[in-house]
Amino acid sequence: MTMPEPRPRRLPLRRMPATTWKAQDPTWREARPAVIGAALKRALARPSGNWFVLAASTEVRSDRPFGRVVAGTELVAWRTPDGTAHAGPGACPHLGAPLCRGTVDSGRLVCRWHGLSLGEEGFPGWSPYPVHDDGVLVWVRLDREGGEEPTPEPVVPHRPEGARSLAAVESLAGRCEPEDVVANRLDPWHGSWFHPYSFVGLRVIELPEGGDPDPDRMVVEVGFRVTGRWGVPVRAEFHCPGPRTVVMRIIEGEGLGSVVETHATPLGTDGRGVPRTAVIEATVATSERPGFALARRAAGALVRPAMRAAARRLWRDDLAYAERRYLLRSSGRWPG
Image (cartoon, rainbow, N blue to C red; front, side, top):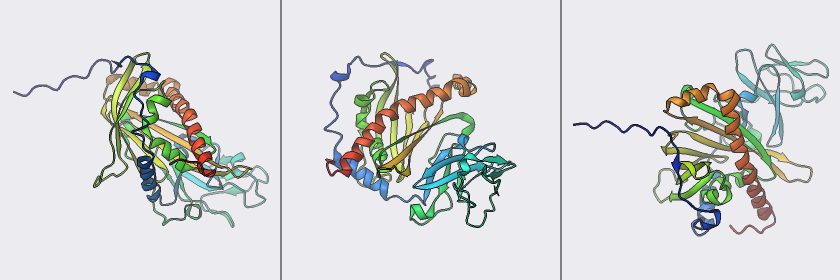
């Protein structure tokens, strides 16, 4: 006789073990600099095909241009009426005006200084860059800045099906390099100590071993705090598909298959020569629960802003860590 599969609990919340921040088990012995450093080294060695995450797909629009500096290169992005994303140099080829302050008219960039109209066909001294829009993020390929063998498309992490998921993207910038952002994500041991408002009882249960097909894969058990002692326990894996990307995927528990992609995009240097990096984090959530469909319908007004706020709070803390790491590295004081 075949037993029916158990029905999921009506509510995903569980009562977390009673503890205080200072009563947690220390994790400094497990967070070995050699383990984190080796994982970081492997990640940085992976090819990118010269692709950089430029922005959230929703930020590149057909009614106005979007501007950002990536790896020291000023860029402007826009969409044509068919919805295709495009990107090109951010300075007008006529007299250098900032095209991000221009307009988009019938799928063409129009410079506000003298009305020069630019399109996907280019202009003498102005050539668009390869662009890839995966539906959540827009990527741009910069071959001169990347310095690698170019590829037709970026390595986009596997995500839940779009029709059954909800995506939110948050972006912040800090004074550090992309490797400092990646190193932060490859140190899951700091979760419950550094972010007690979000994580409860985080425990790393799997580390990379010899012969592992994914040598950067780490697996953790953690409770996502909702309120007080109530949280949602899950098992999640971390891995790096490229040198500037770390993906956390839920592999067991509520939200199975949901991912958080952390992309580190170099911006350039400030007036004092300090590097700046944008953290562009995409959360793509999914769930089999009937209530998730309601959440998707309320996404614009309620859910996406809450998802973005949660990511912003975490990265305000983690960027401070990444900036500290860069400061110690650049001054020769980093212990790792």
